[in-house]
Amino acid sequence: MALAGGVNVITSPTLHQNLSAASFLNPHGSSRAFDAEANGYCRGEGAGILVLKTLSRAIADGNTVLGVIAASAVNQGSNHTNITAPDSQSQSSLYKRVLSAARIEAKEVTYVEAHGTGEENP
Image (cartoon, rainbow, N blue to C red):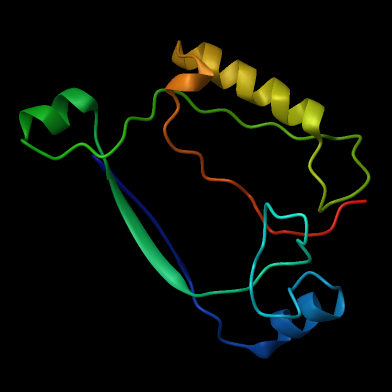
C-alpha cells in the first residue's frame, strides 16, 4: 500500500504577481482551458490524497475501487520552442505508447486529467 498526495497553498503574492506580469493568468478570473477564448488560468488552493493498492489487495480488503492504473508513461517535446504550447506529435506518441502498454483502446478510457492552463496559442 502507498499514499500519494499533494497540497497547494498560496502563501505569498510573489508568484501570482510574476505569473500575472507574464500573462499566464486570466485577467477576468475564470479559466477557459479548452475554449476558443482561452487566455490564461486561475490559481487555486487544494489538497488531495489517494490510497494506492494492488487491485487484488483492494478487492480482498473490501475497498471501493474508484480507478485502476493500467499503465503510465512520460515524455517531452525537446525541440518545442514554446513552454506553454504542447507538442502534439510528442503527446500523440505518448498516448499511443501508454494505451499499448495498458492493452486498451482509447474508447475505453473514462477519465483524463489534462494540463489545461488556457494560454492563447497562435
